[in-house]
Image (cartoon, rainbow over all chains, first blue to last red; front, side, top):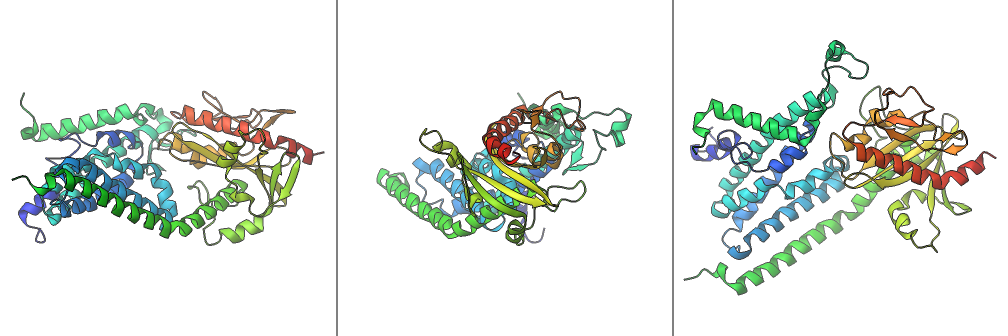
Length: 215
Length: 249
């Protein structure tokens, strides 16, 4: 990467794999379980979080020397909430259709612990540019897991991907369904998301033994 | 030496300034965009009413497609012949009936002295008169609402449902065509008795070939949202029955 120094590019690349916020730090699990029943919802949520965390980290980083330490968590909350409301209003005015589809996710962004986690752990102690990269990196790391989980849940649970019937029609029995395949309705429920995330963690740690904690 | 950011006085001043700045910023944004947002909401209502009537851009098995926003006003004027407001026995025409807030009417109707206003949209499609009834109910997490288009003999000609925050993949599917299309052709009456339409679990008619059983197939994993749809249809269409029946006499 010619554009970024080695140290800076690690800020983006680390959270994608070896320091992934979901599979390694186990943050942001709540939304990862709640909204991954469909691939499309996962993608939308991933993009929204990249946006909010990237900008939020910069804002917090710019204010890092003037934020009173006693109320820093409240200040962080106000920043996220204000950003999210502005995004919501702008979407409602200029991209109404999109804002209808996003409805619940916009609110869910505020509660995402990755956002508060990065504000607290990184943006409060680093310069804006590095904070921006860290925000993008962590949000992307979160998004990748969301999309993987969403892919498997939608494919195995509904037999569709992004709404397209890739495995045939379960009602008229075409495609795979003709030979007796059934959708696994359990995949649509949140507990299965936890199991899928568990499997991802397992695969990741067995490929890279350094990630396994000693106890 | 303690940093200035640790001082109580600094903390309080910071908090006050932060609240004023953020508060006025948000108020400014909301005020500035308000007119555009209201307009979008009006268009959406028109699109929803037209969708229920079958005036939409649906093609084949694709996703739900509305009349585009730049054409919706024209289409609404062309397809909706009359907008009525029913208040008890009194029926008046009101060109802005579609703006009546059903939620507000529901709340005010709790006052026994208040005569609830019921908007009804009379449209015409392919030479047939359709009555589009708005409705509002409760899903699992939040409100659900919709429009049902009936013909003179109480057969459903189309529906539109929407929701504020049902679970994606489960309750949110009430907005999908495979669910809404099932309602078309169902009768809300069983002989002379009002039955509504039940979103039924364990219904062994998933393709919905039986159009006389007052039932459509439920969405797996969305029982409460489905029950909400059933209840909403029963509760809100019932209020229009006296007027609709009087038309047939």
